[in-house]
Length: 83
Image (cartoon, rainbow, N blue to C red; front, side, top):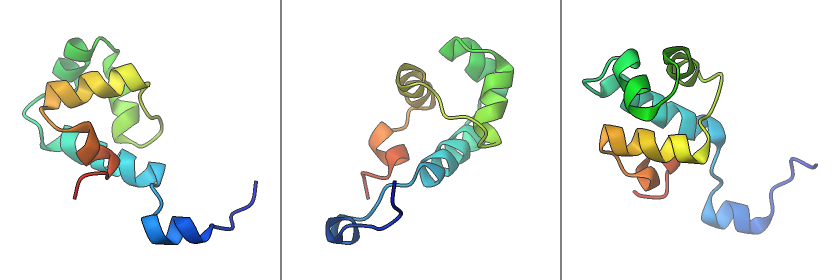
């Protein structure tokens, strides 16, 4: 796969997974929940939340939705679709 961006990518802007991960990490860190509390709410292991914070892993779509709900943040905001 080529790293060459199409003209549409420049016009619309690219969504980068690292940016999404950073926004998710920031929301988790800024929440009033501990990693263990968030893990219990979402139904994952606390070490999984730790991996999200270290940017080692990105949650499955259902887990991502549950995290957004638990943190009371829009998925669009985390995804960078809402400005």
